[in-house]
Image (cartoon, rainbow, N blue to C red; front, side, top):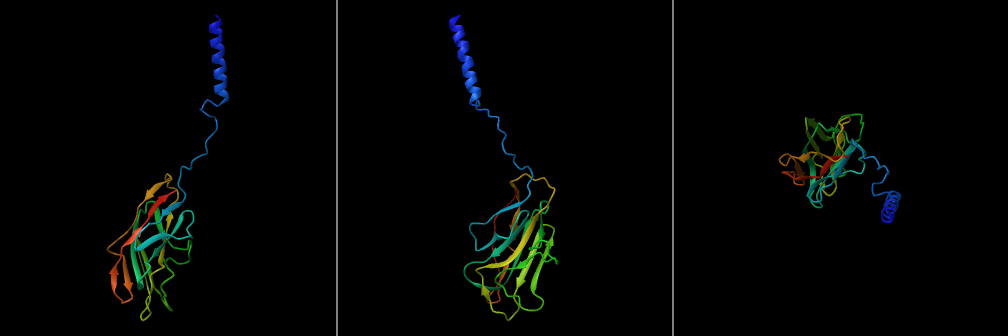
Amino acid sequence: MTTHRLCSAFATVSLAALFACGGGGGSSTPSPVPTTAASLAYTDPATGTYRLVKNASSAGSHLVLDLLGPSSGTAMGASITLSTDVTRVTWVDVPAGGTTTTLMKNGTQFNLGAGLPIQKAKATGNVLQATVAQKNPSPAVPLNGTLLQVALDLKSGLGLTPGTAITLSADGTKCQILDGASIISPITVTVGTLTAQ
């Protein structure tokens, strides 16, 4: 009987100690994890001669992307063709809520001059085509800066899970540069990774 009582007492003390330490189960409530994506996240490409990178003005569901040129060379204009998943995002004006629909913005390099600029963008389904150029006989400018800007907005009410990948690509046959010698040449635009967060 003494042994039985000793074992019972040990078991009682052990259980009391287990519960006092929390027993590993814990009763604290974990922080809630967002279940619906409300913003866009973009990871810049690490390499590439012409790169599509995130602009610092991007915020929340509005993503502004800059087309950056290489560190050398000159040009008078650029044209890109991009495609994305328009069931999840939409092409929009670079400054959100603009008064005119342009779907693109000139970057820091090209001087568009006076009068009507050579600047045009068109969205057809999932494809965006954007072109910007200087007027002749404007001198060619360095490529080492932002050539043009485009923007995307996350569509609301989709209920996407954070981390959902969204396709974004550049058409290698329809991205071009008008170089300093007035020659139009194809360029490869490297695109980063786009997700809903």
